[in-house]
Length: 381
Ligand SMILES: Cc1ncc(COP(=O)(O)O)c(C=O)c1O
Image (cartoon, rainbow, N blue to C red):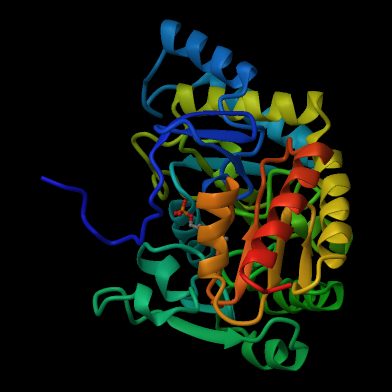
């Protein structure tokens, strides 16, 4: 028996991981500038995360939501404090796509509508509703079709005004588009979406699954757009657990959901909550949001001085650049010959960078040196 062959895979056998580094079975050391799709927030196997999980595992590993779990209450408090958004109630689940399904279902329960306004270039996951609001038709099968979706190009205020109406259940937008190639709505667009939602009774959903947990330099990427932008629902996952599966759908406290409308057997289990609590503890103690902003600026500056790179963009530690032509040869050379793992995006000439939030200036300098050599060898610079 083998795993189902549905992912293109890198030829990389990882033996161990620590901080910013992966080590392969053959002893090669690889600097992680991708965090496994942006999941590693505080660094691989951070000692605080390991210690908190070990201790939780020893004294209480699992019980379901049938009982109140103090670990969930602690996590709600910690996230409320760290995010500056304490006025939400959290529903915990296991993956980003689940957080999205729950967000859409919540919006539809609350306003009784079924139409969704989504952004061109979006990625929200592979489950049924999430796939239908992702701008890539290959993710859908005949059975996940039929959702009434209106598409709006990012930053096209006129198109948003036409699309959002009294029929709209929810408007969904990523804090910063990740898989789409690191593009984001500007402040005027976010503020307009917010006021259109308020006027029409649609709920604004911020998908912060990749861009949240401090990755942009703010806790949530949408926070850059000021107090006028206040999503009704926010989705988080990825960096929340630093590799332990956990997701949360944040629902503004003004909304009350019917008993039994959302549920999950594993969601918000004690181990998952303990992992996320360790993430919050380390982000605060090591000032990782500030670090994300500082190192992000340093990376943008350094990248802009390298010949051959175009359209350098993003903020915090959610960055991308383009090269002339397909970037696969460059990414594979970086991985196998220069010990750097990077990400791609839906556009074939885009390299996506999502290092752990604990990346240092020395790591960035090492990255620049390796990247320049690889570009030179491939005659790209
Ligand atoms: C913005 C965004 N939303 C949702 C998802 C889906 O998350 P998951 O793969 O955990 O289901 C992803 C995954 O890449 C994502 O980047």
